[in-house]
Image (cartoon, rainbow, N blue to C red):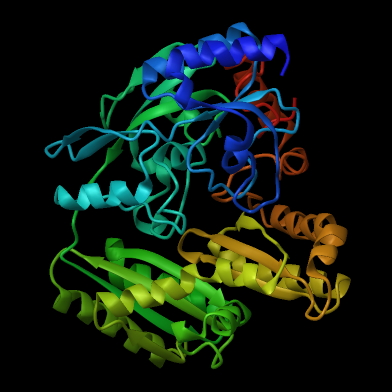
Length: 474
């Protein structure tokens, strides 16, 4: 470590305490991303315990021209929260900042610090008599600061929206170490540019989110889950339209899974007992949250499914009898990603397409990839209710999957993303850009949009010290 490096480490230790500045072997858990796609090397990890300490850390690093990488639970999927390989960046971990600052029952809001774990937030809201609806696979370890920095989606976007829609206010430390307090919790504030929306989804490149005021919702009187086998993706889209018509605002989740994805779960986790996966090409998982009663909810579900059977949209279906059965069905859906890991290396895509065009997109992308790579396997699943597919490619059976991905990932992704652009979709629906999609963004974002983004970055972080090399290239 150079003299200058030692000086900045000592300065940071003076701000947050020596025990909260990690170096050497203590950095391993902070330097590698969750998917093990990126391995960096940090100068140190600094763990502030308050917004004031975050501000002082940012000021010290700005003065020394040392770049910072904000990090929450480090559960991202695009390598956006780990340091580069230079050994010169400081990882700014927000995990110690995990307090509930306020719960306002009448305003139906909760204010928490950035390091608060999502599952704890759900539980805290529940204990207060409310619902916080953001839900995703990593909720046991991801933090609300990271959720907002990436504008996380999850399984209930169809009813409640993305993380952005659940946020009423932010507290942010700027690239200069100043603090913006926007935690008022107002639902209406038309006093100029919306700074909150600027920072949400910016992946730590414009400022450091230190706290947030979030919407709470009344607990539903009943929640029911149904699993249905559908003959085709077109039928799944038609069933979604029927669900909107029959269930209205009560529809909270609508997930789709193809046969191969469910087959992987059945293969690697047979104890989960995947229903109907061999009977049809696709299955859907539908969630209903009802404000009246379980009997009312069940009546809505049964009426909708009866009509769907009559129209041939559904081949078979079950409605969970209790919360345990509902949990088991959701656990199957959430195990697809883990089953892919068990099966071997794969190429992931997180794309969004207008819902009406999804079947046509899948047909065209499947055909193009099958023609280019014999034997590849398609793991298609995701949030059909909001047009977000996880369109993943598993290597052909019986070959070295790691070598296949290393050799062909770029071409596979080029075919997928070119098809996404043809259907006016997005190459990142909910995972963000990070480092992994950095070189793809200029190919699929207009020059005007990129120029505007660079102008904002240059104005707010002129020295490019906050998460450089993420979202926008240097």
